[in-house]
Length: 387
Image 1 (cartoon, one colour):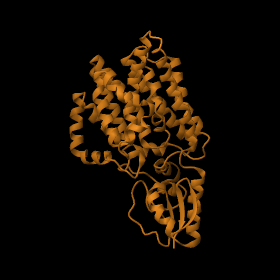
Image 2 (cartoon, rainbow, N blue to C red):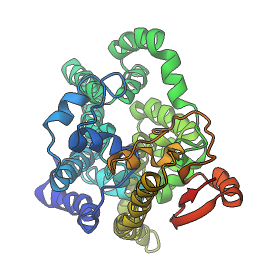
Image 3 (cartoon, rainbow, N blue to C red):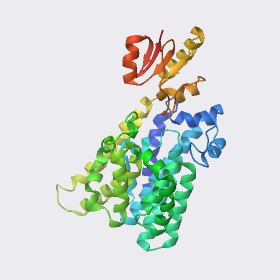
Image 4 (cartoon, rainbow, N blue to C red):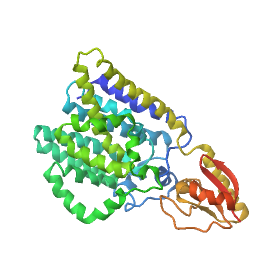
């Protein structure tokens, strides 16, 4: 178990991004407003578009930014503790630092800042890893079954959690048996969700390697440091990361465990030069964590972007022209009382003539800049009056 002092260190690391987040008037994200529209505007999500339990959970969450951010904070904290506990199974003295070194990549805590279904499921998944590793080390079937139960609970909240049955199936025969019908029934859907989507940065290929930040060190060294029982999961999630950056958060624990093992080995050396390297590793955490935490203030959406959308809705009403948009800002438009023509990555090709148009798509905007009157612009989001 991690000590109280170790827990407090992780607590501060997790809390800091949310302290900066409290200075914002808008919650972070694009898709997060799909779920906020359920909680605050009564625009209900459907279980087939999320997961079975998600709409019911959303019904119980009040439309209160403090409560919503508190849920996300505790999701981050419990997930971080879950990884730290997994590290403790591998190294008794420094294992907890697997949770600490997660913050060498800003993508770890940024994955919990937007109000979506997946961050709520993450604590179940990262504690499932803890119980699986514990069960494998101690050859305890009870812990392995607890691991699969936690994955099952996570699947009720976030559909993507189903991948954990598959990856655990590489190490645990019961999970292998469970994953077989999953692959038969959901194989095509799973593959389609893993295919890179170049229109969305978080779904692009290769870029996930860059997103690892200074934890790239853990990715490179993992084959030389990670215990054999973690190698199947490391290979699986790293392969997924190369194809689709969205799943980076599931690979990061293996990189942080690697850095923890590197740190522990260096601490045991008595060489005068080598003793400075562990200090450098700790410094890297602070060099990434603090500036990236502060940067939450600047994340989309910004008040100016919402002002632009409100202006577009008003202009549509005044001119009688229909309001049209490409999908990026769709949920924002819905949040502010408009009726988007595209949202959530989907939308048919549209004719923007004689329309009020809101767009963040750079390729589309190049054409609209030539053909329409640009009324307003805010951080890549543009408002056009087209004739």
